[in-house]
Length: 221
Image (cartoon, rainbow, N blue to C red; front, side, top):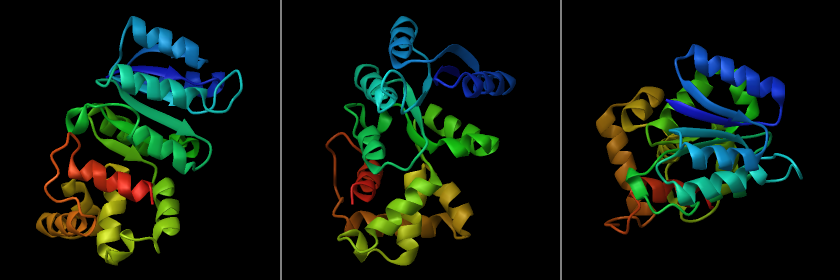
């Protein structure tokens, strides 16, 4: 894939450049600010952008705002953001970040920076985003699950349905969910249909897949 990096830590940025190059990806730009990232993407849109949420000059949400702008203007570019902390608002904004591309659009992901040190997991998330899927950090999903376990309509889900929805939020396919939970693919499909019914997502045809809407309901609870 053609990748662009935005990370103000020179050490982490150079480490990611080397890692991606070793894995056969083409790093088209590696910059330290959101402004430089937007300029690089405008000049030569990549397949995926990897950006830190907090960047100069204020180190608040410059990277996130740049990612949202990229998703709005260039919905064909996948976006994977890195954050030091679990911040629900950022995860929700990314999923709803202005793109009207719907289920056929580019992927989006939210990883904690600690996950980058787990090389296989980071590369797997990057591949999922590049393939047009979601890739949310398991810790993000776990904390959202704790916060949402007593909130309707998610409280209507069974423990197994909640596990399936959590795996969906991480970006796993039906086959991957089945392997992780040691159940058949048909069982996963039945659980997903039950989730759609309980979240009242049946028969949706407004540009977003029911799968994306289910994850959004999960993140927004």
